[in-house]
Image 1 (cartoon, helix red, strand yellow):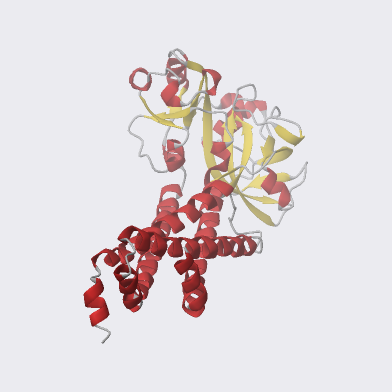
Image 2: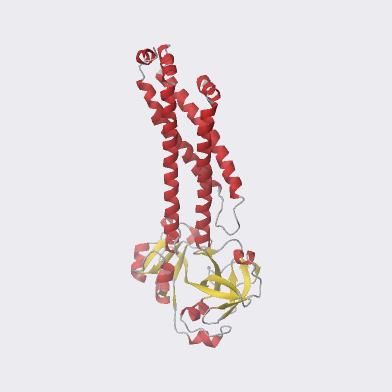
Length: 385
């Protein structure tokens, strides 16, 4: 302990240089963690907020982008409602559309068609809930961008008019696009291509014979996870002709989610490996330079365990101190990120990233200082003559 602290002070220039490198790596891990969390929330926050245990898609649907590819109907819904462990089930329609507000402001929306009296109906923080055929409830992030109650969204090409009647609480996006909830009948009218210019009418809705949607949302008793819900997924899928994914697994069915998360995860993995290699290389050079001092310690009777613990404690002090400084700098930089960037700092991912940086750096240092155990005191002392 005494030797480790004394060397940290004596060779402060070298340790400061190494500390700056570790601190910069910690800054990068915080920034990447914030970007990763921001992209995840921007891509699937609408799904995360739903009181859903699992989604059932039509059998044979390709898993990526399944919410756009899958088509299920009410027969399949009734089959799932009869399965043990299923407390409730409801159809969900999903379509991404373009529109215009106020005549010239272009907007992109993900239309989530739900039955107004189902468990999928959104809770509102402002305005009223679903009911009118032309009424939509949009996410709070859309309000932050200037949306107002009573705004009329005119959909491109079909000129169908939808009126903003309420806002949800918190972020609700899907595929990086704000969600607009609307009655399932209106969604079917738009998805079938039979929507006409102007506000949807009951006559138009009644003329649509479709009973389809994109997916079946399943809710277990008490909101238990799918694995603990008692739902026999295989039996339900066989009866309904579907393939079921848990809520978390269904995130991969949103546009671009898997590719984005895999890319960021790969960058973080390489960053951790680089951290371990840089720390290992530094302590390898440091150990070679102080070989004579270590040999003197061994010759004076210091056990190998003492020398190893002293060297690892030195690495731990360096890693913990500089990582904390780097995390603090990263959090400060995160607060300066522009509002349009999907960036969100969450305590748990930052804590995991910091722990991995310290742990893998310590592994690299351990591999470097293990050479201490092979130092021959007589040979090392003799080499200095």
